[in-house]
Image (cartoon, rainbow, N blue to C red; front, side, top):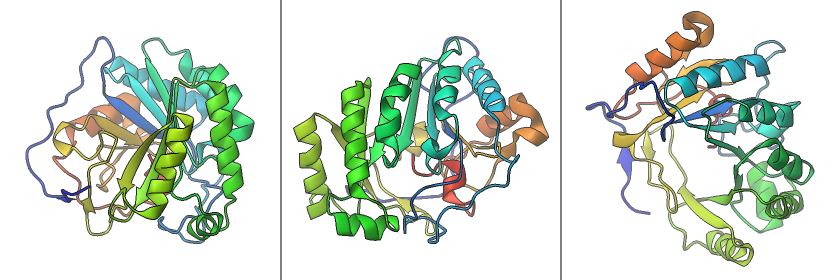
Length: 282
């Protein structure tokens, strides 16, 4: 996992809004900033903040925004958080999104804590792909990293996801420097035993603007990035690692999407927005 990348301005990636059939462009939608873990990697060690009632995008707004994005040629949507499964009615939202003509790929990233209760219903509602965070198989280390989380619940969630039969199921393991670390090797073996692909993500330094390519994935290639992110309160971000955003409440859905695409940087600069609010776990 060599090849550190730093953020410097340069030529923009070659991506523009194109009406017509959906393509590989994707939208990461944060449906909540709330989380049931208090992971030490995030900005607020005491746990994710929660937006006051009424600040979150409604399901109607999320569906309308997604429909607009699909019309622009975005064919993939990933639901993130916070933890998306703590958003009340999340299965209903998945079913609503699945009804959008032209949306060819619907995915979610979860910490797995609640997944044993949701996996089957999510699959039936039309969720095709699921990524689950798993950094260690050591219960004590998991509690320390997650602020008191229960590893058994995550493992039960993974088993439930396997049984549900998702089109694609992946584990995401954060490492310090290499997949050869003890925890990472154990997670890799766990994945092999269950036929689950494992992606290794080197811990990002969001403050210093440094990150590394994903091992087992296609992230961290700024020159060909075709992703937009939407915060749970309706701000469209051209880049995860850049403060610039465009609110759908100010510019409208069409305007915010167009501005985000038009201002997509060659690389990000920095970010002071709470990570959970924009789905930085995706």
